[in-house]
Amino acid sequence: MAVTALVAIVKFYGIDGNVWSARVEGLGQLAHPILGGYVIGVAAVWLVLWPPRAGLMQVVWAVALVLLGVFVLLSQSRGAALALFLTLLAMPIWCRDRRSRMVAAAVLVMAILAFWFFESLVLARGVSYRPQILMASLQMIAEHPWRGLGLGSDYRIFASDLYFDHAHNLFTHVAIELGLPGLLLWCAVWLAVLREAWKARETLYGRGIIGIWLFSTLAMQFDAASLNGTPRAEWFISWLPVGLASVLVWARANPDACDKISRSS
Image (cartoon, rainbow, N blue to C red; front, side, top):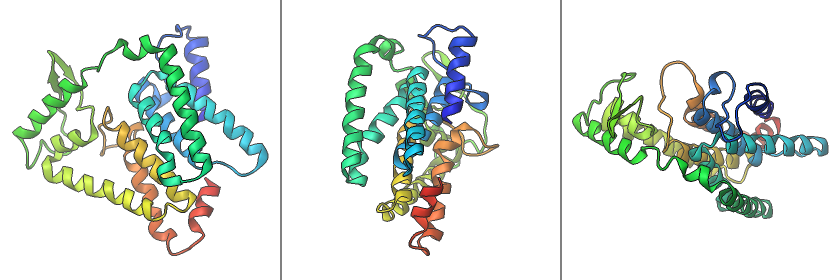
């Protein structure tokens, strides 16, 4: 992921000649500032929470973490940046060690400096129609509250005299397609991920899942609308946490399994 971020930055600004104020795009399926920022952001979270123990790999880890963080900043995806900031700031809640407190303090200082130097870029796009999209989404849910429009329906959101491809919020997206029963089912699955990860919070693997879950929960409030169809970038903040948590069922049968998984990751 870090190598991909570096190549994307070099290509976007160096080879393609875009100005530094432009929003960097990733490669391949990540060729979108928001989706690229989300995927690279979740990679930064698991890198912070699953650090290597060997000396040389720690150097590689630090360089990779810097590259991932720079990409998120250059993507100017405020949803990804905010999700990353709040996740790392909240690390002491479930990690409860000196390292997590140091990470939280460092992130807070960097966030203040980033806002100080890039305030104009942060505030330039306002709220990007998110409140209007939310209200229009709630209206669509109210029109079809029980069955929704159907799984995989091709719908558009009309707000502020503009059409948007989706609800820009995974929870309202699920409710639009599957109705309130579908939303409740998805919420049950999502909360079950947190429950299982919290039970394993004393392990590296459990702490990593909690961090990824929190980042994903925050990120999906501002974008992402895909639960079905072919695998795509949005699945890094939807199905990836579910898949990781499913391993915990097996891992509890082996007391050392969680740490082994984290070390291999």
